[in-house]
Amino acid sequence: MVQEENSHRRMMKTWKSIFAIIVKDLQSELRTRYALNALLMFVLTTVSIILFALRGDQPSSTVLAGMFWVVVFFSAMSGLSRAFVSEEERGTALTLQLVAVSSSVYFGKLLFNVLLTLSLVFGVTIVYTVAFPGFTIQSPDIFLTTVILGSLGLASAATIIAAIIAKANSRGTLYPVLSFPILIVLLMSVMNATAKALDGEQFVDAAVDFLVLISYVMVITAGSYLLFDHVWKD
Amino acid sequence: MKYVKLGSVVLISFVLVAGLAIPLVPSPAGWLEFPNIPGLEQKARNIFFHVPTAWTTVLAFLVSTFYGIQYLRKKNIDDDLKSVTSAGLGLLFCILATVTGALWAKFNWGSFWNWDPRQTSIFVLLLIYGAYFALRSAVESEEKRAALSAVYSIIAGLTVPFFIFVMPRMVSGLHPGAKGDEGSGPLFEGKMMAANMRVLFYTGLAGFSLLYVWLFNLRLRIARLDYHRLLQQEGE
Image (cartoon, rainbow over all chains, first blue to last red; front, side, top):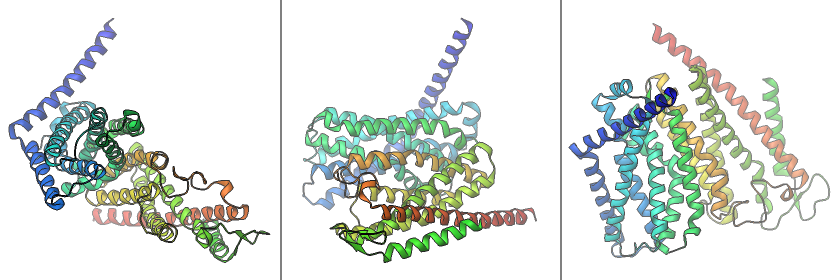
């Protein structure tokens, strides 16, 4: 009885610390609004450049689906590294190492990045629907699943790479260089599925993409969790 | 070690001579004639050189990741030296594989690059190697550099099975063994190759593998000497 209570208490403590890290990051984000502003301006700039480049031409659904995730990818690259880089820059990394268990830090930062990515993708969807008349989602079930799975996968890969580059020099350019090879699998599946969503296909047609995405998320998250200690702890 | 050197020289020379010299005829009679597949003809010779380099680069990547894992477990810097050495060789063979593949693609499919899944995956491997070395050059502390590059190669290694097994089956491609091509199986199918071609092919694989071991040994010894010289300089 006491053992069950103790393990229950430990589990609640872990969840509490994960939640505390998410809240801390959210609060500092909302205070400065740095990442949100950067992401928003990045998305608007990129879409404007695309609109100028197209000059009235309407791209096909494949191109629109691809460009959607290109914008998401680069916006994520400019915004998601803050989870760890801000700790190093502010000098709070050591404190966090001492105060929190590494698994709590990992899951806290991961969930924070998931929230950030979901809002980013949501924002890009709105901007795209407004900017491109060809961007009409004819299969909302495929699109929703793709967006959720894609955000989870993007955030999990981006989080571990952010942890890696936080300890290196020249972080800005290194981040997309390291992330892109890891994310190619995700990007290919997600672009395929989004194109199918725009074309109005059935949910089962995208099942292969979803299976790849689900296994990708599980593999990357599990691997990152197991390896996080080696990156985080000096 | 000298058997490795001798073996690689002998085997690769043999493959070089036999692969290029043995004539392709419509109906091969004996061991010194290859079957001439219409449409493929002389381009079939590529298989003796392109596939072994691709095989060696994957081998080098696996070895590099293995020693990365060993470093994380034992924190012995020698394991990190082995990891870098193998990664450098892997990069070299990856460039060779990409170039020979692109050349073959030009003659066979009309253009150097087609974003066929297998072509894409060798390109991704090239990007992974590039990113690996970019990461290493950005970290100053040796222990941190070793740990971070080991973690990165493991994470990258986790995505590799997706490329080898999932993508080529998902997306139809031009490479032999892709979804749209029912004729030949994965990479090299037994029934596609005549017996004598298969012998030469496996000889090529063995020869390139031995070459890899030889180069690995050389570069590792150099890396160790460099590292000890660095330690001595820091000690002074």
